[in-house]
Length: 134
Image (cartoon, rainbow, N blue to C red; front, side, top):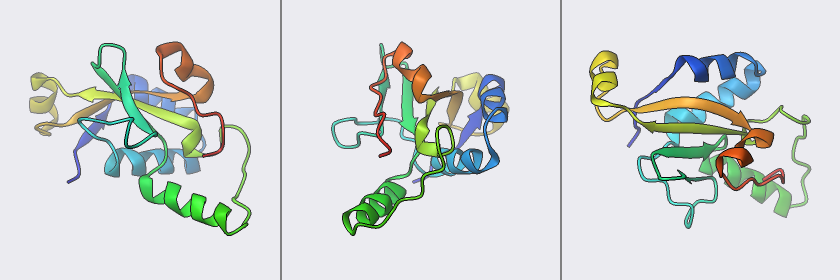
């Protein structure tokens, strides 16, 4: 089940500094892959930060990860665009919406994306960084 989400002004500003292709990848992840209870033990691309009030999701869908790993296993070259050119090089930081935010946006039980951080930024907030491509 898809969970509706909204981007805070800060998250929108974070997106403004990224390439359009990366933004499209991150929007797809936000629309299809955010969880209210991320479990890093079953999905290494998601988890909780600190006292678990903030959640995170790496900018790659489960399906895209499977596709890329399968391609690598077959010996195919996976497209490399360079630093900051793939969604998986960014992390979506989000939280459940407050009651007031849910009412204002019309998205009951929605999620609020509060930041989009690059790999070089997420280590400072306690997220385990996977500097490898996948």
